[in-house]
Length: 274
Image (cartoon, rainbow, N blue to C red; front, top):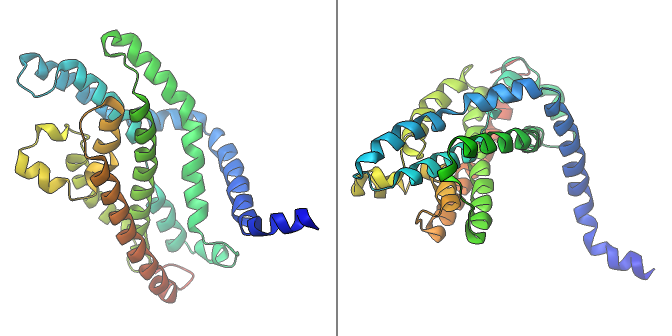
C-alpha cells in the first residue's frame, strides 16, 4: 500500500512519458530510413560554411572587428545551430489541411502538433552522427580553428539551441495555421525567411552591424535563432539574460496567437481544405 501511495503523485507523468517515448522511437526509426536524403538536407544547409570562407578572407585586412579564426569558429557554430534548429512543419501541415489528411488526426486523443514536434525532435538525433563527421572534416581542413567550448558555453549553448528550435518551431507552426484560410501558407513563410536570413546572424555576425541597427535587431526574434546560440558556443559576448527572456517572450506571443488561430481554424476547416 505504501509504494502505491508514494507513486500516486507521479502518475500524472506516466501518460506524457509514454507519448514522449513512443513517438520518439517511432519517428527516429522513420528518419533513419532516409539517411541518404538526410545527408543531402545537411549539405543543403552548408551555406554558412561558404560565407565563412568569404568573411575569413575579408578579415585578413584586420578591420572587421573579429579575427579571421573567430569568423571561422563563428560560422561553424552557425552551421551547427542551423542544423539543429531547422523546421519544416509548415509544409507538412499545409499538405494535411489542403488534402484533407488532418481529419483522421483530429479524431485521435492527442493534438496533431505533437506528431510534428516529435518528428522534428527525433530527426535531430538521426542528424547528429553526420554533423559530427562534418565537424571532424572541418577541423581537418582548418586545424587552426580547433577549439573546445567552455563548460559555460556548452551548457548555455545547448539550452539556447533547444530554445531556439522551440521558438522557430512554434513561429512556423503559427504561420502554418493560415493554411485553414489560404492554400499556400508557405508563401508567407518564404517572405518571413528573407528577414530570417539577414537578421539572424547567418549572413554576418551582429558585431558587424551598425550599433543602432544591431540594437533594433536584438529586440526581434531573429538573432536568437542563430546568432545567440552560436555566440555562446564560440564565446562571443552576449547578454544571456536578455537573450533567454526575449526567446521566452516571442515564444509566448507566438503560442498565444497559435492557439487562437487553431481554434478559429478548426471551425473553418471543411475536411477537404480551406
